[in-house]
Length: 457
Ligand code: ZN
Image (tube, rainbow, N blue to C red; front, side, top):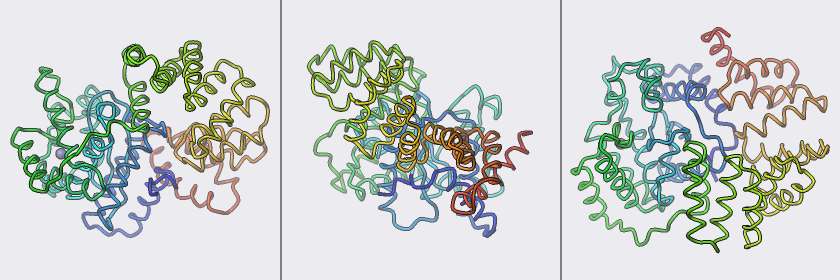
């Protein structure tokens, strides 16, 4: 399954950036890719990102399923989640698609998420942003970053770019219709319900009308009109793309929404909603488990423990993982261990379970077993910054300093801390034996040195 998690995103971006520099093929697809890569590199340092595997992998998997239906592409598509409560999504030329946590929280099911991704992928696929801009005025990534930053963080962006900047990112009406049409087709090809895209746009449309002046930011760049909705409705009808029944959120989407909300919204709002869900269905083990997870994420560890124990008592197997994490943070590693061991057994390919199991082993002084668990976590999800960091610390402690610097460097890289990443990776370069990892480091260093120069590092 191609969810792009085999190499870290950052490594792939750097590698591709270098490949581009060396070939110097200056056709427009290459220009777009270069622009997108540079943007993604800067965005990694400047935009707040959601890094939970449960959230990022769902978006990657959904997007990739759509991309897989497109046939051979001039660039790889990559999907990111911006930690921002607003309903927004945007696509950067070259295949870089960003979804905000607020949008994930608003989707009713995976088909609606796929609807937004399909629409964004269509903009990229049809080169809309580049076609919209006069060749001579084609923006560089710094301008693009400023414009997009003005959408993510209005204060920052406005200061850098001026108030009208984000208007430049507004798609033309005919491009919106084309993205609707293409997006619907991609969805059908990928086995998603194309009508879900229309459902989601209707939801945004009614939000815009009911909240005066508080339109979802998504609609500023993707202007929605009654005409556009009617057009999409007609497309769906002539293709007989009906939506038999709304499946409701999958377990994966529910978990992604839980984390997307708790990372970006005020804790008391999120807590209240999950408490209400438990009050409405007191016998629902799943609802109680989710409340326990929210309590854990918001730091209410004692309440989390009680709630998760209740969920377990009601038959929730999933509660083992979170209960183990809670006990670990309550400094009860001995009590936490059996829960996390069961979580790993229940879901061996869950990188979070592997990572937390590693932490409990480390806490209990079993460094070798902890190291192995961190390696499994990183193997399952290379973009897991926590696991890279702990792996680096333990490898260094075990005397393998090359590996230690390498993984610490990766952890900084994933956090967008490029200056610190450079420091660690330069040490790794000096100490790693020749091989894949050293080759990877040699690819990573030049853009990081370039960044450090530009930022006085
Ligand atoms: Zn659009």
